[in-house]
Image (tube, rainbow, N blue to C red; front, side, top):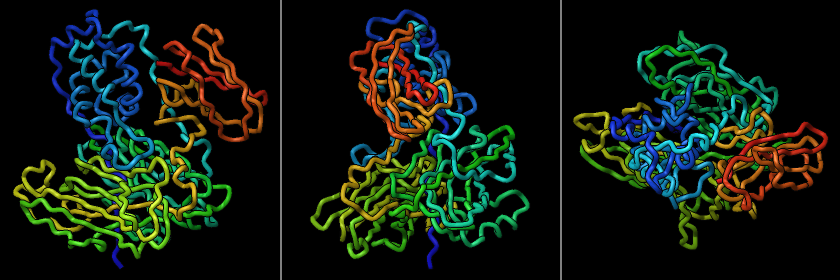
Length: 539
């Protein structure tokens, strides 16, 4: 049987080309801004804090920091180029063609603000009005895991400027089958861990591959090099781990191994890494098991996958109506190509002729592939057709073409080969699935991997900064009445509400419309646990 291996989640963060800053921009930076010119303190910093510093800060994988006015002003032209070109923040799906969880990107207003600021001389403004940097989580996003699998040895990354793909076998030690409600990768060294993929092996084949290699782990690109039961969700810098909705999960078989494939980014200095995986089990077996399938070479209507030199060629694959034997709900999609990829899209056509848009990427980038979780479950009716179309550019017009002059390229796992794949995660459909959100609340209160509280409490506010109403997330251990108080930075109470909470995760919409712009402190008192506090900014 054909063995399909896939790179579900590739590099999300590339190196931004640093542009030379014109002396005039820096010379004007401290000058009082002209009327109407945005300032860093009040206009630009909130955008950078929210969208950039998660990766552009000390110890992270980005090539420079953006954690202060001096950092941002020194890279002003680079920032302007990155946001106007759409290169940053990294997000490839086209707008209006599928709705996804945790999507990145700036609004046109935010982009215009940055452009006007740079072109207006990059003024700092009143430094006292600069919002504080967000604090970043150093532990689990999801709380205390049920199982932690850590690399048994340290991987020593040579500082030779080369990309390394390495598979590490992590025995689960499970004595019985378990239902996974969430899986969370924790990088050991964020300066060098570029992305992670995770696979489930029940055959022991990965252990044999590991034993053949004198070094810890064994090499591999895109797939684990062995037949696997399933692929688990991957990780990229800034990714948000979330629980599956209640009743939905993935089964880990007893005695299975988790294959952790890590991509280590090029570095000029030696680095060590010992990453780990946090696994959270459901209290009860899921009544709907997540199933994975893919449109690949065997589903092509115009295959095989052969891309002649000096050609641009589109391939189409499909699931025929007979394959979709019952209504299903799609959780996620993951298109995959290599360096010749140009664009792709996936969609379904219902028996009534309606089109359901799943994903479209207009400017494929091998370095920014993604595993994209839907914002809500998406129903695909019984007897629908599902299509995947992908275009490849094997000409000299493709700057990523690995061959010069171009050569005929066929299917294969090497970077120099090509792939035609789109993966789908789905469950059997149930009435009301369209209303089930996959952006499940985080019990530790981390949104986009950012914590704004001063401790690792189970409380968060999203979005930050709050432009309108914001949602307060917090956790209680028992059913109780909670008193929610909003105070200003002088300690004056501006709002008080009392609500009844249930044991576990709770959410409350903060009434912020009447608040003036600035910083506030929210306190949650339940009487049976220590008070929880968190800061937020109203804009």
